[in-house]
Image 1 (cartoon, one colour):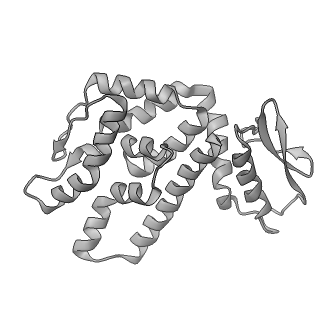
Image 2 (tube, one colour):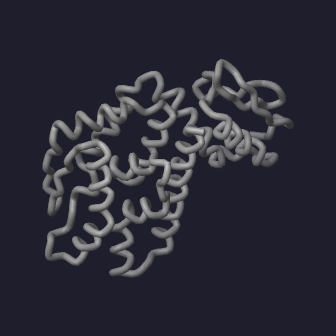
Image 3 (tube, helix red, strand yellow):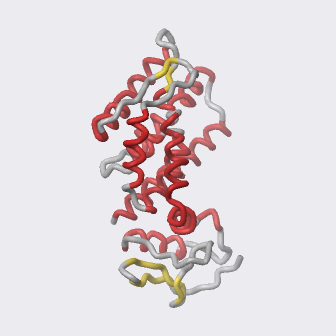
Length: 231
């Protein structure tokens, strides 16, 4: 698709913000008004539009796609989005460890235990740690509490969480990424621990490294999106 606009600007509307192209408000891919909760997020969305060349590259609309997810998918059915996120808590990667005699177990404990302990303290919950891959249910009280935590988040935070949690295969990591002092690189190191471990043992693969870099870029973008939405 050819670039069809010249001027990119930001307008206020209904207590929110939106991007305009040559004075016309941008809509979501679902044809809804793309109203976002903060000026910083609107500015970042405008920057995506401004950075496009003569040929529009949809892959460069990372933040726009997250905003559209919040408006077109999350907002109409928050319950479904929360239920999908809770399924990651039921089998959170951080809770499933190698056997204690395995060297990987110690690395997992070093990186994962602080994240689990912080989540337990923050929300007064308990996570069952499991050695091996046999499923063990998390306490019902933990899942109920996490459901309430998710219900208190905005549509835009839930959109970010949908990406963060899926990439990390961990709701604990996803929620940690929403904290004001979140360190994207440190959280990604925890999420990618097992892949990094395999690379240490068997050597790095160029295609696998490229894939990990793309996934980290998507993770970082989702974390930035959540911060921008908070303003």
